[in-house]
Image (cartoon, rainbow, N blue to C red; front, top):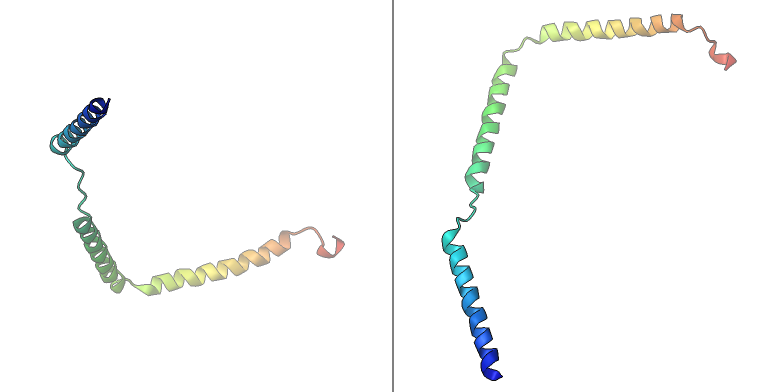
Length: 93
């Protein structure tokens, strides 16, 4: 009886050791190079920000200011024209 238990445990230990040996030597581990990947991403973002900074330095803002002024003027015209199209008297509601 005791020999059977010891023999069973010995077989289990040998099978486990064989399994871990085969797993370690026959499979390739997944390796992620997080450090280099993150450094590359940060460098790309820095280059993108620097190129955007150079582009904004060369922009002419006078055209944008004119468009904004036109938008503001048109918006006030829309409000006044909207008021003329209302047929309902707000006090009757």
